[in-house]
Image (cartoon, rainbow, N blue to C red; front, top):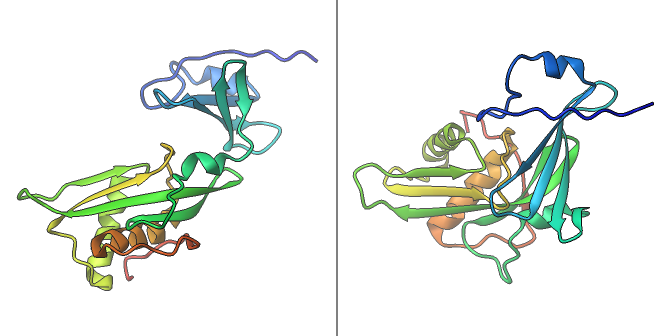
Amino acid sequence: GTAIIIVGHVTKDGAIAGPKLLEHLVDTVLYFDADAGSRYRMLRANKNRFGPGNELGFFAMSEAGLREVANPSAIFLSRHPQPVPGSLVMVARDGGRPLLIEVQALVDPTRFATPRRVAQGVDSNRLSLLLAVMSRHGGLVLGDHDVYVNLVGGLQITETATDLPLALALASSLRGTPLAGTLVAFGELGLTG
């Protein structure tokens, strides 16, 4: 009837340092993450012998200690007073929790021989694939433009449901036309468009 907490160190890749003995020994493995300078902390259950794994909890550091964030989607939305080009809200699942996350894109004509591709919060290889699909099947050629994408709040999303919102945000930025503020998108785009 006694809970024992064992604290382990992690490597730069986020894996528990040393042999896997510690992971095999315990019933639950929790990762406690924070972005530098952010008051928000994320607690992720990567292993749970008696329940679901890959669950995510959000907390805010206050003067009185950690407090639960009741509406974590508020962290991932920047709340523009009016719709702006290159911004769209998407729905993503992290563990069993659906989150509303703002996708931001900036497309700008390049000033160099090779256009820049910067992805924060999404896989840069997935972004390259998406740009190729948009060029081939969507008629949006971005080969002579720098492309910057960001997920507000610093969350990393690996699911392919980010494809459609990224494509819409990129097209919105390229054309300088805001998308409807009530639009929420999610969905995968295949290589065939």
